[in-house]
Length: 255
Ligand SMILES: [Zn+2]
Image (cartoon, rainbow, N blue to C red; front, side, top):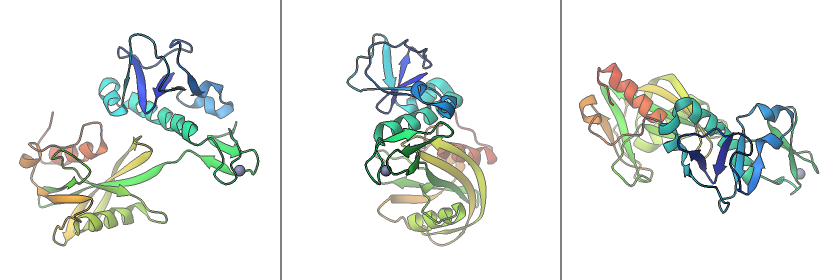
């Protein structure tokens, strides 16, 4: 089972999958092994207090670093396990009446014993889009980034909104241009804390690039030779997969 402490995963060397009882001493908050029925099909996790004694020879790493160590498949399993683990840690009582919520045996829901309200682990869908124009790619610098990083445009889907509408709205809000030819690219679970990133490609249609000045400070269309010299996202992210896909379509590869 995977062992989480805060938002980090515990490793001994590069090992992350531990047998029951193998890590001794920590104060356990919750454990998927204690759950009924259907819950046993989840990637197993143990949640330990940050103040707990973790034992010798172990270390804690964030999930971005974990991807570099363990790869896509393990990252995906850890992403799932950590999101359930954090949900159990943070959502312990019914938000309608304050009663205790208990896990279902037949699905991945939890129910209030007092009022019957049913809850599922939250997932926040977000769209992320590579916009191309005359052999160049739209990249933007977000105000939240401390370094000079550039990436493709992303944003959360709003209630009642289709994914394609979210793509158009986010790009218009952040850089002021319209797009056409929106095509699905792929998706990625992104447990920071509970996003589902849905990737698209699109073509520039019309408008002048005007960064919104709040979330986006700088933006422009860049050609492949410029992009390979820029500070772009880590290969763990779908953002990078979109950028690499653009570069590969113009016969440029990054390491
Ligand atoms: Zn309730």
